[in-house]
Amino acid sequence: STFAPDEPEEGEYRIVRSKTFPIKPMTQEEAILQMDLLGHTFFAFKNDDTGAFSVVYQRNDGGYGLIEDEG
Image 1 (cartoon, rainbow, N blue to C red):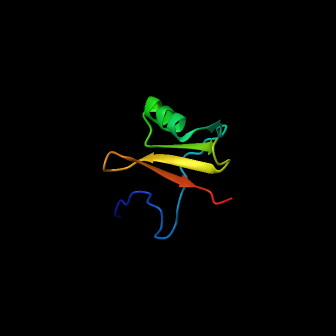
Image 2 (cartoon, rainbow, N blue to C red):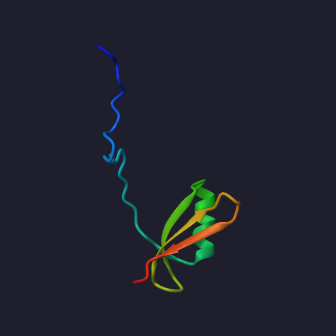
């Protein structure tokens, strides 16, 4: 018999870790600072300026990106 690693089937997505945390209101600048302090490549927060659920992320070009809920 052949050995095959336990890979998900094509089209199957498996969540291997789940985490909950409070979404705190803060500015974009505070969120970027928190992301950098934690050493993460993205950080979710509630935008204090717009009230929207937002994510800041580190771009490959060294800059930062922002994704926001239209809500």
